[in-house]
Image (cartoon, rainbow, N blue to C red; front, side):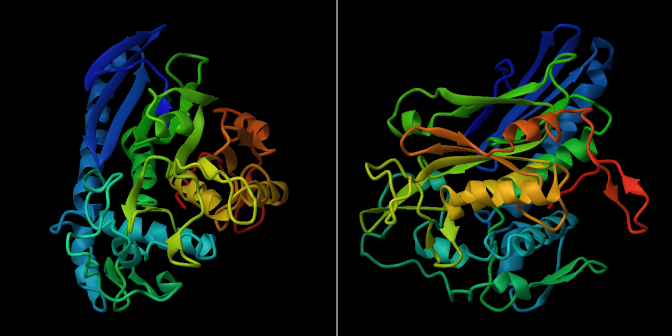
Length: 398
């Protein structure tokens, strides 16, 4: 888990830092803690309060529309209509479109169509109801979750942008939990806080930010120690990252596991097998079957929170050290700006291994000094004519 290490605030507060005040709003939604912080000069307080409130309203709307645990949600209605064209809200359509783009960019390693398999493993209700518990029914029966989609079913999803319609293949149902939080944080910053140069949106540890709480100061994020948390110790940071542009996301299963037939299962499914990925879940085993160290948590930094969220999950699926090799190779070939089509482009990684060792990708310092620093010079991305270019801060939501 990732925690922004700015001053702790109640749900509605104003905190003074040097020549700025930090307007903060927080609430619990999307099954997690959500917060918005906007740092402004004292005279901009009213505008910042309005922007923070609008951000929170946006995040609440995303929660209402994209939850798979609300039968009335837009997502549940789409899933129930698989096989037919379904007219969607703008929120649902945009998020599904981004999920398909991410699946394509990752070569299918990120797959939003694994919901039936996730339910078959016992994650068929809010996580709070199954955390660390046996999920088989008293009779020992399996949940009725319908047909299992074939591998790569995401590629058969049809999108109609003009009509805002989606057609899922028969038997396919979506879980957007692997991208929705980061995507929502990106929209909150880009759309609703566009007029402010220092803002941070935190959706359950998925961060999108720019600027900092005070002039010349970057936002700071602490990476929690998964080994301590798995052992029931009070949360403490095992590492910290200070940056002033881009997104960050942390993923792991050291806490988010449940029991299936007495064995630990988790939500990070490998689409190549349909089974939980080989990651550390707090047990004594610290190495995989091939002898490689298991990853406890993966933290990804990327131009956007959505890309960081996907990259963190890809790291867990690839394992150590393959996860580092993939993004280091992409950085070497694509440079700091990366490309819109590659899930590994413009990404840096921090991994906490089951041994407690913290390892970072070789490009971490270069990432912080380029993408992670507001105002840092970056190469321009050539336009279609090969001469014109767009500014590097243009949102890339893949």
